[in-house]
Length: 251
Image 1 (tube, rainbow, N blue to C red):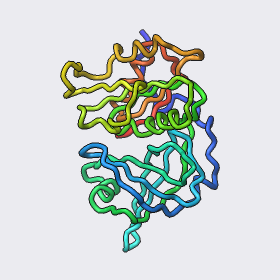
Image 2 (image 1 turned 45 degrees about the vertical axis):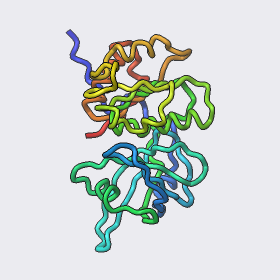
Image 3 (image 1 turned 90 degrees about the vertical axis):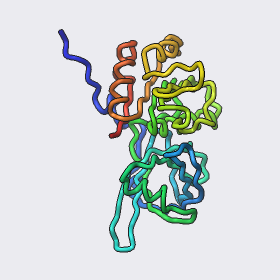
C-alpha cells in the first residue's frame, strides 16, 4: 500500500513570476491613509507607498515597525488589494492574541502613522490572470485570494475564476460585502437559515471541478496548516494534478 498523501508546503516551482532584487531589497516609508473594519477581529489597513513598483495578486510584502528605543518588529503580510497604479497597498490583518505587530495596528495605529515596507516579495503564489484559477481559502487565508478576485474584476478578465472561502460563521467572513457569483462561502459553525454547516468537503468542490475549463484549473490554497492539508487532499482526491496546486499556509 502506498504511503498516505502528505502535501508539501509548496507544490509549484517558484519563479514563474520574477521579483526584481532592487524592488525586494529596498525599504520604503508607507503612510497609513485609512482603516476599514471587516469583521470583529479583522481590519483592512490602506497605505500610500511612494515609489511602489506594483505587484501581482498573490504576492506579499515585509512590514517593519521601529520603536523609539530602536527595537524593530518585522512581519510578512499578503497584499489584499489589486494593483491599480495609485501607489496604494492594502493589508488585512487579524487581531492575533499576543500579536506584537497586529496588536499595534488594531489598538494603536492611527491614520497618518508611518511604517516601513519592502517588496513585493515571492512569485510562486502569484496569479497574473493568465490561466483559470480555482481559489480555496479559510479565515485570513482569503486575503491573497481576494487580491486575485479584485484583479480579475478590475481588468474585466474573461478567464474563469472561482473562490471557495471557509469561515466559522457569517460574522467571521472577511470581505463579506464584496463577494459575487464567483464565490461560494462555507460555514463551519454557524450559518444563515437553510445553509448547511460543516467543513469544506468534496461536495463543495465537485461542481467546480466538473466545469473544468480548457487547460484545467490552477488551484490556489491558503489558510492554516490544517486547512491547507485538508483542502489539498480533497483536490488531489478529486483529480486535480499535484503540480497544479499552489499552497500558502500559516500557523
